[in-house]
Length: 487
Image (cartoon, rainbow, N blue to C red; front, side, top):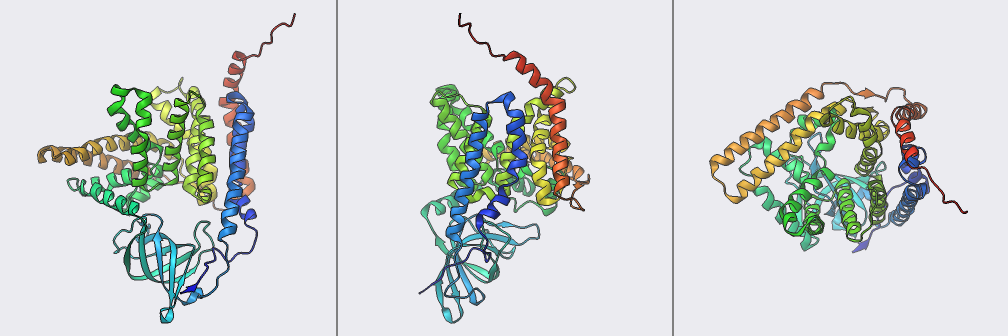
C-alpha cells in the first residue's frame, strides 16, 4: 500500500496570521466588557488575565495543530482519487437544499487501477437526500470526486459522492453502543404524530432533519434559531429532571454531583456540539467548586470554561456555534442584570427578565452576526418572549408524553398527550411564521469595517450612559475603602 499525506490547504502563508484575523473579533467585543465595565463587578486581575491567557493559549494551540496538519501531497494525486474511506466525525444532516452532509476523517484513498493509499485529513462529503443517516464513528466508503476546500478552517477537502455509501462497521464499540441507544430512543417516539416527533427529536437529540425546511427557515428569520440548537437550555432541563428525582433524598449538593454521569451520557448521546460541551463543562466546574468550598462568579466560570474547552479542542474556536455560545452567555451575564434593573420599573418581572436576557445576548452577538451574515433580526427580541415559553412548555409536555409511551400507558392517554403536544407545535409554528414576516436589518450593502465599529461603539456608549453609569455610582458609594487609623 502506497503512503499518502493529505494537505489541509494549498495556502502557504503562516497560520498565525489567519488565526489572528479569526480571533480578532474578541478584541472589539470583549474589551469594553473588561476594561470599561469590569471595575464595577470584578477586579481586573480576576477577569482580564484568564481571558487573555485563554485567547493566547487557544491561538498557540491552534497554530500548533495547523502546522502539524499542513502537509504536502505525495503519492496519489487528488484528481486521481475515485473512492475514499472515512470515519464519520459527526452525525450526518440535511442541508437547506436537501443534500446529505457528512463530515469525516480520511482513512484511505483509492484511485484508478485499484491503487490504494493511506490518507489523513478531514473531508466534507455532499451526498443524496435518499441516503440513510450516518452516525459518528461509522466507517464508510464513498465513490466521489475530491477537491481542496480552502474556505473552511477545520476541513481539508470537499467530496461530491456518487451512488450509495458502503458501510464498513464501527471505529469503536463506544460509537456502536451510542447508535444502539439512539435507535432505542427513536423507537420510543413511534406513538407521536409526525410534526410532534420531528420537533421532539430536534429539541432533545439535535436532529432537525425531520423538520420542514420552511419551519427551520422561519426559526432563523424570526431571530430565534438558537432554540433549535442543543445548549445550556437543554442541559438545564436534563439537570432539573435528574436532580429533582433524588434531591429530596440526598440533598442539592450531592444531587448535582450525581447528575454528572447521566449528563455526560446525554452529551455523548446528543453528539457534543460546542454549545452543549460548554454547558456541560460549566456545570461540572460549578460542582467541583461547590464541593471544594470555593465561591466564584458566573463570568469567571465562563472564562475558565472557555480556556478549558480551547485547550481540549483548539480548532473549536473557529466554530461559529462556539463563538455565539460564549458571546451570548457573556452578554447575558454582563448586561442582562443591568438591563433588568433599568426595565423593572417600567415592565412586570415576567417581561423584564426574559427581555433583558434577550437584549443582553443580542448586543453581545450582533457584531459577529453582521460580520458573518451581513444582517441581523431584531424582531428576535420580541419573538423570544413568545416563542421561548411555548418551546419550553412543549419540551416538558413532550418529555412526559415520551415517558408515558415508554411506560406503556393506555392508547387513550397517549392520544390526548399527542393532541396537546400538537397544539403547542402549531402555536410554535404560527409564532415563528408570524415573526419571520418582519424584515431583517441588512448591513451588507456598502457597509465597511469603520461603520461596523461606529455602530458598535454607539451601542456600547448608550448602554454605559443609560444603564451602567447610574448603577455604577450607586455601587461605588456602597463599597468605599476605609483604612484603619495607625495612631
